[in-house]
Image (cartoon, helix red, strand yellow):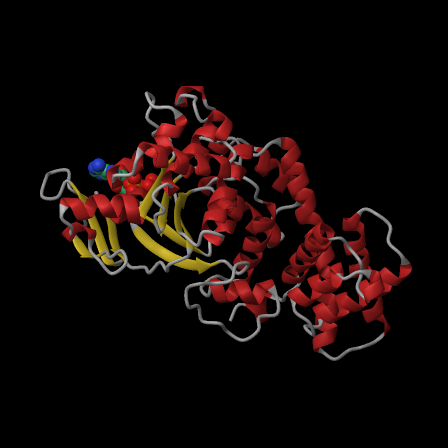
Length: 434
Ligand code: ADP
């Protein structure tokens, strides 16, 4: 897309410019998310890509071609062979069985009925819904319906999958199944996946996130946890999450970056509006302007009353976590300060001991003295910037017999993540956000 502008009801009294000056490239094999509050123009872009909502200015090309120049035959081919669609409301045809719903799009390519059924059945099996093949859509749960529409979107083997809030109507278990299916379609089948969402928890699946607001693309953020397909300026090795975040959000202050880090740690299933409230509230606590109790109270206050609207229990867990991280990070901050001043005296050892102990407490089971010793060494190396996060993690899960700390895979991930959270909060505000 280049300088894309899409106008509803052009030339009429109720003319409305839904997107303005949107430019972006999406690469083959990428998983991207359009993210932003309701009404920001996500679906508008979606329909434009699909070839059913022409733009009023700018350029939009799919595989180098402008769908709005297609003849009607070319358009059918494009909308079946190039793009597969998944809608929030499923749009299965109620009078057709599940298997016929999936087989239907194959009709347009003149395939025999037996072949169509066979192909549909393969997809049903793949998404674990083959037992429902002969049922009608009204007899399926939301999660099953959405897996049927995922299967349907793939039946013509298209190169691009467009999914408009695919989990908007689903519970958390079905949401996970559908997101895992999309992940697999992207990573195994190598399809390009474009998903519209306002659920922040789903952004982890995307290579890049396109943040939208008021019809504009505000920023593009690569996911540091995913190997990028798009060409991203690979800066020099970034030691802490803080440095990494400051590259992603160059205009944010160090405090705002710390807030991002904590909010990212706390969020499970919050929507965009709740997330924004959570960020402003967390900023107050990171800047020590409110205390733990006030933070917890505001977290559980109803959204309509200015709170974030999470349950009381969750609010307490969240505020405890933040409190603990902020307190423990003080020791990491002291260590860093001494280290930077080349002040290697005995206290340094005490601080490393304390920091290792904090990690140990997160682990909740006893581990042998040799593991403790290695953990301390790792903590020292990491906080001094001698090793990267990946090296820390690797050593955490290397077995004791092979010279590692010997945590299992899951523990190692969790504890590493936790320690990185301490590290980022320990960075001095003045020194960080270049
Ligand atoms: P999102 O998908 O991010 O929720 P949309 O793309 O649906 O947002 O809508 C973007 C803006 O365009 C909104 O302000 C919406 O009211 C407006 N809009 C959407 N569809 C139409 C339409 N058919 N006619 C006029 N305005 C529309």
